[in-house]
Amino acid sequence: MARGAPLPAEVVHHAKRTIVDWFAAVVPGGVMDPARILREALVDGHTTGPAALLPDGQRVPSRTAALVNGTAAHTAEVDDIFREGIYHPGAPTIAAALAAGQQLDSSGADLLRAVVVGFEIGTRVAATIQPAHYRFWHTTGTVGTLGAAAAVATLLRLDPAGFAHAVATSATMAAGLQQAFRSDAMSKPLHAGHAAEAGSLAALAAGRGFTGALDMLDGDAGLGAAMSDRPSWDGIFDDLGETFHIAAMTVKNHACCGHTFAAVDAVLQARETVPVDPDRVRAVRVATYRTALEVAGNPAPATAFEAQFSIQYCVAAALRLGSVRLAAFADDQLADPALRSLLGRVTLAVDPELDRAFPGRRGARVRLTLDDGSEHEVFSPTRRGDPDLPLTDAELTDKYTELVVPQLGPALAARLLDVLWELDKVDQVRSLPGGSVR
Image 1 (cartoon, one colour):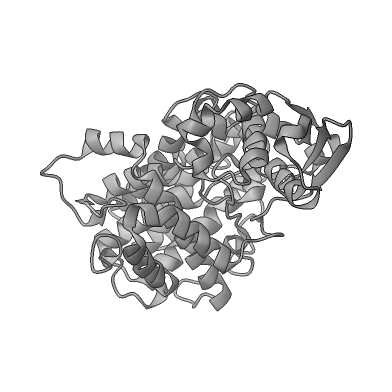
Image 2 (cartoon, rainbow, N blue to C red):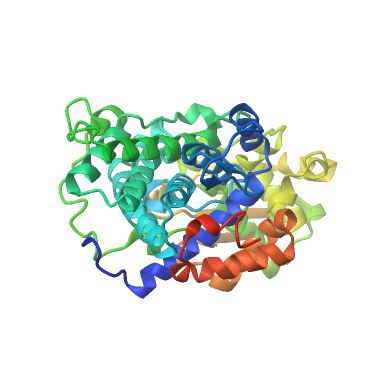
């Protein structure tokens, strides 16, 4: 990707989509407990700075904004996915880029370019170290640090050596264990926030001459050896500037773990084609890939967080409610006896064919057995929102509106959205949240 060369119009458009989708995640996430608690811990009445916290636009130092906004963007479980890397690039990368762009008084075009670079670096590393990396590590917390560093280094206009040192230093700060999201804890979204802040620090320090170990990815004790199965790094960046992974993002269509999506899509399809009365369903069998069961196979979720990581709950909610957005995880739904009874009738199994296709394709087979003994099977070969079945711009706008309007109100949400779709024409991203948009 040649420095200063114009980005293709299609790539710019996909970058705008990722930023619209990021705001759809960060605005509702910004009022949830993980981000709220971090704000209380780090921000007082005297805190100020060039960057803005969302959704209220309070000004803070850029690293604080990267940390809190990065956490917020990964809290509501509606942020983007790079399927082949088992990775949510937007939460850390855009949080870091926006905060740094506000500190540096960057333009919208600068921000878009930085986001593209951060996505392209992070997605290639993520895909290279999978699937072994995902046994223990949360890719958004680990590789997200590199993506954030690359984005901020781009805004700083570091030379090739400085850019390399920024990414190298970020790699040694990469962290995030999967155990964090196998129980009801706030650490999972914090992984994204930490990645945004650590990547920002690495790039800002590299801009002042701070050096990193340039063999941090492929060294004998580097990231590949410690966090994967010693993958080959040959040629992973050869197609930079030719193939753009930012054009292959998954936009989440449900407010839960992406490993539940194929099963949810199949159930929603069954509701339309059969149709199915939930009260007549006696059994639901979901066959999908093994990782989905390992990460999201909770048969008895007690909290909203646990329910978002429960295929059984999400399938039951899809059957009863016809949607698995944030409202599906409200207290009244979690306690609904009919929904709880239905999730108890959901069983999970590994489908060998779908397991072999993971992570490049995420599918599920769902079989519904009704009270008259009839069976209805639906196969979802991919997920709605994946690059081979993408959400349209209009559907993305609907998602944004549903999630952002409750916090910003319809007028401000609409004005902000208009600006985001024209971001390449914005002179100062410092004006975006909490500034002239208001």
